[in-house]
Every structure is written in C-alpha cells, then in structure tokens.
Image 1 (cartoon, rainbow, N blue to C red):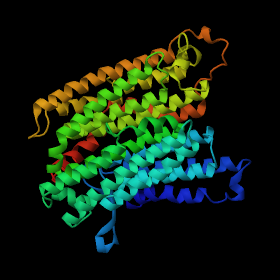
Image 2: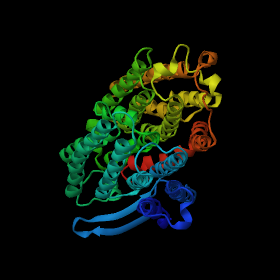
Image 3: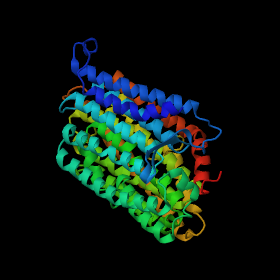
Length: 518
C-alpha cells in the first residue's frame, strides 16, 4: 500500500520526463507523434489502475485512519517530512484525479488540440497529474504548498499554447491570480508551522488548534483562506475562471474544473477546519455569505449568457456554473457540521464527474459546429442535436439535468446535504443567518434548473430539416463513448448509492471535526 501511493504520486513525474525523450525505435510506429500520445495513455492508465487497487486494498472499516502512510525526514532543521497518506476524505479525490487524467489522455490520443509539440503536451499533462495527486496525498504543510503550486505552470502552458482565442490573456490572468493567492497562503502556512512547532498535518489536526492562540488562528485562516478561495474559486475572486475555461482546450477545461478546483476546497477541509477551529468559527458566517452570493451570481451570469442575442459562449456558461456549484461546497464547509462537510465533499466529487462530462460534450459540439456560441448553435430553431446527433444530444441533456441536481443523480446529494447542514449549523454559529443562507442556496438550485433547461432547449431541440444545407453532424464516436461512459455511469451510481461515498467520508469527517478523536 505504501509503495502504491508513492507510485501514484511519482509515476506521472517519471512519465513526463520519459515523454520528452526520443521514443525507442520499436515503439515509434508509423507516427512518432502518436507514440508519445500512446505513452501518455499508458502512464495515466497505470496510475489509474494503481489508484483502483489502492481503493480496493483500503481498509473500508477504518476510513478515518491514515493508511498507506510514508513518513521520511526531508529537512530536519525545519522538521519538514515527506509524509504521505490517504483516508476517506482524500481517497475519492485521488481516484477522481487519476480517472479524469486518463480519460483526458485517451481523448487526446484521438483528438489532440492544435498547438506545439505533442511531447510537451503529454509531459505537461503528466506533471499536472503528479502535482494534483500529491496535493491530495501529502500530509506536510510545506509539501502541500509545493504540490499546490506544482500544477500552476503546466496549466498555464496548456492554456497559453494549446488554447483558443485570447489564450495568452486568459493564461496570464490565471497565473497572476493564483500566484498572488499562493503567496498569501504560504505566509499563513508558515505562521501555523512556526507557532505550533510542526508542519505535520496529522499532528496539527490532532492538536485541534490548542497550540495556537485565537489571534494566530484568525490571521492564519484569513491568509490561507484567501489562497484557497482563489483556487476554488470563491466569489469575488473568481474572475480568472471563465476566461481560463473559455480559452483552454477541452482537456484543459476538464482537468481545471474536475480536479484543480477541488484543491482549494480540500485545503479548507484538511487544514483549516481541524487545525484552526476558532479562526474558522470566526470566519464561517462570512465564508457562507460569500458562498451563497457566488451561487446566485453564477446562476444569474449563466441566465444572462443563455439569453437569445447575448452571444454567450457555452464553455463560458459552464465555467460560471462552476462558480455556483463550488459555492455549495463552501457553504457546506462553513456550517462546520458533519452533515455540511460530508455534503461539501460529495458535491466536490459530483461536480468533478458532471462538469468534466459537460466540458467533454461542449468540446465535441464545438468541434462539430466550429463554435460554442449559443446564438450560432441555436440558430432559428435550435441546433436540433436530438434529430441530427441523437446520442450526443441525449448525453448533453443527461449531463445538464445531472448538473441541476436531479434526484437519483450525483449532483442531488451534495447540494441537499449542504442545505441540511446550513439548516442546523455548528454550535455558536448564528442559526437565523444560516437559515437565510439556506434559503438563498435553495433559490440557487431553481436558477440552476432554469439555465440548464434553457441550454438543452436551445442546443438540443428544434427541427433538423431546417439544417439540411449544413454539413452532417457526426454522432458520438467510439473513442468519445469510451471517454465519456465512465463519467456518466459514476454519476448514476453515486446518485443511486450515495452511501458508497458517504461511508468513506463520514467517519473521517467526524474524526476531523472532533480534533482527531474517533
């Protein structure tokens, strides 16, 4: 188990270095470019297989215990250790990351985005995967920061070199926002480590803030929270996200929404809730307020984009929807209750599955029509995907209703549990205020349903005979079916059997909120 976790974190990094080397003669095939893409599929496939084996070998009777642990001294003078481990909170995120990266590599093998060398593309995706997996596996504050930052440069280049229109401006906006937030976060992490005498996240969680004064906790939450909020992203620190998604290639958007956004909310749960409980208690109402503003803001922005004549971009609309969905995650965390935090973690996984699928589908629509502009897609009577590409239209409608939180699909449980958590927040938090937040969040679910159904009506419905003069639209192809089916299937499984995921997270959350006591 220890070897598996170390392999999962390190293998993509080794694979990235290997991708930049010349391919051995026997593996080049007829097309050397395809050889490196095949290498990317192989490495990410092996990492996914290792993650699945790790999940199977995980002791599901003790999900609150750190398992597959490695603890090696790295910088003795600062007591910085190479400390790895997984519990019921991090394991689902680890598997989700491995799955989405493999599906992106598979998609790229058949549909490589236009840009420079495929070698560089594969290497960047693998470095991105290694940094993300490390973020969910490390248990040292400084290692967490290094892993957190490791993903920025690969994503910057994926947007800047393989993106679409205005890619340079979007990439610069992404890197500047996230770097600025990270500098502030580093100060907070150093403050905790120096004041407590350790950077070990397990020891700090067990101490539960008893070694930190109230003022230190408040400052630490403010500094670390800003850095995490930028990555989440929380309103009003979200403005880099729509530009980045609109400009990014399809696989960049999938990884950005499905994986990178989860790093911010994971930091709130893994670091701030157990290590600085008093500071979180102080800022919880403000975090909840920003969260519900983000829910409403994201929904209203989507409604504005889907309006006829608004020239709204479908990728941009899905990006704004992520602002609203991550608002539910932050609201659940702000309740500081097991119900709310479990809902936040469930919503994290659901958002990764559903929004990853949505960006795959929007990318496919853009490839077929040459645009993601909603007015162009809708035309006079709609793009009529139901009639012209019925399987693609049906899957887009499925992803849309999953995103709006239809009962029986994964999106429902996370939002419902976060609202239940707001109904009865942790002791000491203002219940009237959180009841207000709950009501506003519930309104956000209605607005989400409104804009998602409008998207389905404008893109999927209509008379296909009105488009007879246009080129024929290809339906779902075999490689697309292979890349998208796991996400759709897991969306249904998580919706019908939420206990599979909640059984992992709940004991770990209970222990986390109890200060390391089971």
